[in-house]
Length: 404
Ligand code: GLN
Image (tube, rainbow, N blue to C red):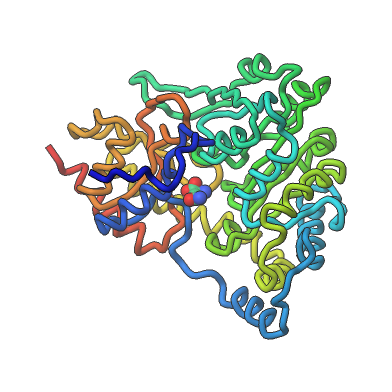
């Protein structure tokens, strides 16, 4: 027995409830079992060579030292122009836009900049798994309401809707922030203008701010348009808008995104940002700034991803999954309880683990987007993959329909 006490003192965890993020866990499991990874959301196809050339050119032009704390001016100007063109709100690129190390850093920094200990923050579950720990790190109290699950006669979830009554009850004088996410990960649902109007009605006489996570803004299907908080003159005055170039330009590993907010809010955001990452890598910002100038580089995304959605969903349906509608994002949610196999009785997490190890396809349990145990028999597949990847995954999944 070792008689020496450990050299590292015991210390209480700041996040006692938190383990490793489900996306990392499922990716590791996929690697272990050589499964096709449709779990963590990232494209498996290359980004445009033109974007890489622009970054190379920026490096060769010696753009390799610190950029301004808020980001390269050309990129902030490009973001302001894009938002103004698409959503008709003009942000001042100098005082209202900051380039961040991806959406997740933007979200954490926004929360740390406005939430004080004891403040309440409303989230809508299923919710992206970084929201709750970010609120906890700020000392805030998470108030979670759940999307309403609409079910068919067999009890199968067929779609979700916004829980307006619960939201109204959740918002009070202690509410500092409400986090919304449209297009929504994992369900693929989108907010309409009328939804933003309803939210505006709820917050009008309160001091609640809004954080709108819109990282999937350019993947909206079937001829719909993305409705941003920037479309809403009243909400925009109290909102942080978050987006991500990783999602839009197929470079999730570059970790470059942005936050837009009114100058009074951005001033506080900067105070946290400068001592968190300080700023974001320079050549990527110059490269993205050049690439962003051509609107085709993001306006073509809906048809590109819609074709993948249609191809993959058709195959999943043939296997026997009951699919939930996907209005946007690169995720397809599917109900597996309809499958005629013994495993369809498993919990979502068990089913995803089994699917990864035995069938060779990784997916994400939607229950991972809830803090309290919540089983709806729904799992999330990412279809941001080459057609050959999707077809290989479907071939493996097809064995589910031949069991029994
Ligand atoms: N946003 C991605 C997803 O939902 C994951 C990002 C991450 O792993 N941090 O799959």
